Image 1 (cartoon, one colour):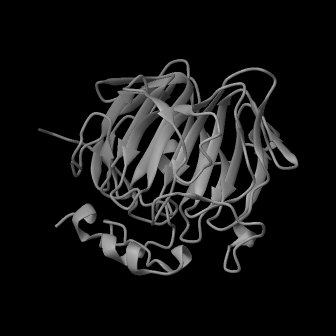
Image 2 (cartoon, rainbow, N blue to C red; image 1 turned 120 degrees about the horizontal axis):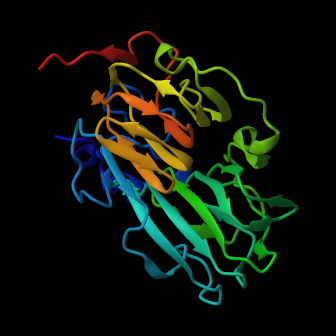
Length: 302
């Protein structure tokens, strides 16, 4: 039985408070406290979860034209969405396109939300998020009104983390159990320093943490430097999502370039990583990569 089948949908329905829903365990043995729900996902190219198979595809997939967040007033202008990966719990990763006239009222969401701006500018309450801006909004934290500014469509990497479907609720204050200590209202990634990576395989790459999870996993930017060659394949003992912002990297036989999405289930054998020109990637991982055994060099002799 896979992670999707193990998830008990009635748990969310029978729970009076969306913040009391039990974490879903990761399929590598984790306890679920990282709350990404990257295990057991379907993707835009495989409607059923395929274990131990690295999936690469461009975000130019079917587009939902009249998309709205569940619970939002009908008067809010609809957006467009390309659904990239999803889990039965309601967690998902999408590209969302907000039109120039978009404006939504203040309120809360019933699930954690991460957003990373790929193009344009939005105002959320007192804060602005520009290109490569990041925000983490825990379930139950009240946001100010959301508005597109500058007259340009906003393109967002939009990540609903579960463990229940994300809905809007018109609350005038934070939920009493909201994790305000984890709230990141507006982070300009361009102002963050580059640091070292956690694994030997990427020691010549650079990393910017956007958020570090309680279980050691995280959300970060990875700069793979020009002339990088990983030499060997890797066994990746964790779940990962990665989006190519610019540049490219060849992973095995696949040419990962700008606009490519990568979904890596746990214990995948990932092909040799090679790039002449380098690349910039947005990455989410549900395990601490600094621990021994999470990333292993692997030479396939077959």
